[in-house]
Image 1 (cartoon, rainbow, N blue to C red):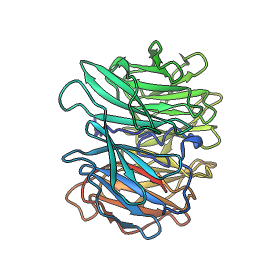
Image 2: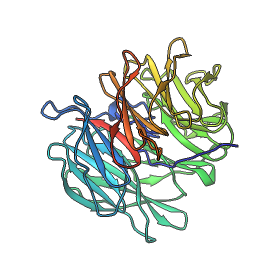
Image 3: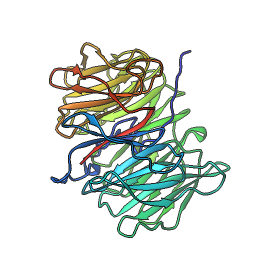
Image 4: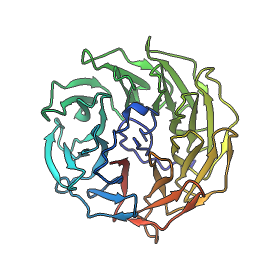
Length: 385
């Protein structure tokens, strides 16, 4: 069986989407940074060696920003005014000025065993609190609240979980932490700072997405070829919904009506009605769909196919796939500009002319532009100004 899993991690959402953007998947409009007219719209690419800013007007990459010596960048989120990019780098959270492209401060987070890192970031809807997830060791993770006014870390919330991904409800009340080895999801109240009882889901859960109304969490069970819906009012799981083998990414339409589930082994995308919790007929994609993003107008879903080196556009209304769009080698991350005009795809493959590049796609024509060099593997893409 062909499985090439790359673990990220996406700041709440979806595999590789950020406009947000592994979680980008949550479809929460309230989490998008408020634009600042003085700053250019930028695609911030977290790489193995630092952060590469790409000016979306010119598609020119800027100088790599090394947030910390010998530390790779894993996840990013923008402040509500877009002036600060918070970047998870090694055992710290780095603050990058969107205006100067310089690191202005670093907040040490990770504790416990040597080599432990900050893996996820999520920002509250008010923008006042940043939550950083880090490893402690022995199957324990910490969720650390940071005041964005003072840049001071508060009391850590400890959970027993080999954690992979997390997402915050758009109303900011609860953070849901995915625990793949425990086949569960842990809810954390942002009001009390306390974790609730684990919620049992399917085998080897990974991707997570939350409806815009904050009422339902959808968790992909990669070992069970299913998606488990969770009611946020009761924190109880519903009946698992069958989808394709190894669901790797979930994206929810802006109107909250449909969750599109990309299945890595099944080479397909399954639409799931979020109200009836019924799956429709699977839509063929390319080989090994890894990430999915939906345009802000809700009309098109773009699926990055890791092995076939392509992106599949899917009409959300007709649920038909368009011709594959050729990109670079190993596309695994995708993000769409707020105006919906351009999708940016990170290509991770090596030994190819388009390796370690970001490919821009014009959504009006579904034409790919020339790959933008970023130097090394991308771990995340965030689009913000």
